[in-house]
Length: 257
Ligand code: ZN
Ligand code: FE
Image 1 (tube, rainbow, N blue to C red):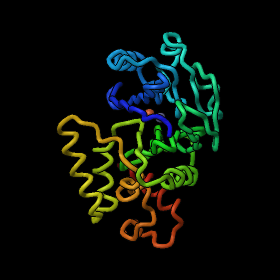
Image 2 (cartoon, rainbow, N blue to C red):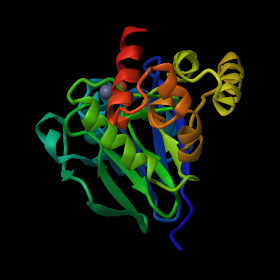
Image 3 (tube, helix red, strand yellow):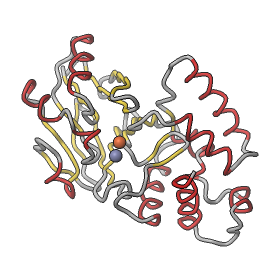
């Protein structure tokens, strides 16, 4: 069995999550994206951890702004999506769909999850059941379609939906409260969603994060993963449309909300 990993998540740049994954025995620490070098340095100092890796999900500045400063300070290895290689500052190793690399004895599987950006990847630590999905999936939401179609994004979300239900899901942003208000307009009778919305309101009122979530929780509550829900299909008057079209309509409504 690979060693137990410690995950430290914190908010920076207002609503971005930074996440550090630490393997104490191997002495390795990976940052999942690097929204803010100073905030990550402060977290590393507080924990007494040495940064060895950055796993980049996509090229947006709010996910890569800290790459160069952190690499200069720590000489860490930066892994990122092959299709966006030219746009990831400091990248050392480009990865793509189906690639598996090792981190402290853990297999990390790479899933291409395009839609938000054309080359976006998600990282799945198989044995530890940890998924880092960047701006593809949010709790009760999903990323905007900047560089992809609804059909592409639906395929990406379907990959994440297929991960084991108990997988802990870490996302790029704390958007859950506004996502919950929108989700309730799409599937207001969903009891699991109503309960999650209550929980989210309480957590945010206390200034606490709503993440990580789990695959099972998102499958039960997130309308973007539920285009097959009879309630949603009835509400959108799309009884027979393919799932990706229903998904696309939900995304369109969120963009206009
Ligand atoms: Zn983004
Ligand atoms: Fe982002």
